[in-house]
Image (cartoon, rainbow, N blue to C red; front, side):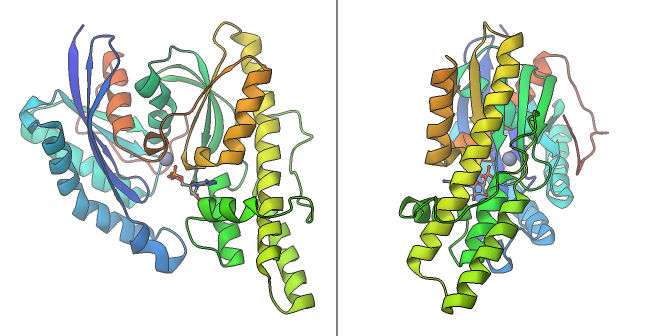
Length: 347
Ligand code: KG4
Ligand code: ZN
């Protein structure tokens, strides 16, 4: 029944974030504040996240983020029980900025320091938002990740499969770039796809006939480039209709692949845990309506609960890091000043 108040820090990609989360015993955790500074404008001219620019911006913004998170929670550093920080995987400069900031606070205030795997933060989000019990099946779909995980405990995950190349969000972003649509690509491709004919262009469905839970999205980009170049060669340019049809064909290939592989992962999961039929999603791509509807239909067919946390907690944030820190702390984890930043950190 111990009450824990944790500060969380996140800086592994292009969002600088700080949050305060409190949990009294086994009661549902409470997000006292969650501050996120996006860096999208800093990188927009470069067509992707520039690691050097990201690291510098994190280093500059972390202090402000921490201050704002404490002010919004109406607390000071003296009210904290520990500091949790993303220690990887991610862009190493950014991760280092966060780890150093967390170490500074921990040393200054004599607080325990807990390193959190960014993926664990995403994977535990449905427990933070909905208090669900272990085990459950997790689908992580973002700009950087795509994997199926069975979550059994804060340090106990089984990976059933994932992408062997690009993440789906990356594929949406590249598609937008190839068609001259605005970034981030997910929302703009989804909007264009609504007006398009998904059957005009035949996109591949890679790995669909393999019996595993692995996915591949890089072939879609190559196919799209070929189709685009052919239209341009024939007509001298793309019409609005061409763009819409290309987006619709691309999105329907992504949806088909994701739904089919999720069905496989869910069937495997349900065979071992028939009494905990829950599929949860996290990651920015979970915002896609076609993907969401496909997953909901699949879950209804397999009599499984479908759980999608609010979007602000699906994308990168520090509340999930603070919460994962609380769970790890309760499980006995403590990281001292030897905590290191890790660019790669598989579950
Ligand atoms: O989780 P997230 O905010 O950041 C990380 O990648 O960690 O996810 C961002 C990704 C971007 O690639 C963006 O294009 C994609 O999520 N996304 C979408 C949609 N909204 C955002 N993809 C498809 N459909 C959407 N509606
Ligand atoms: Zn993430």
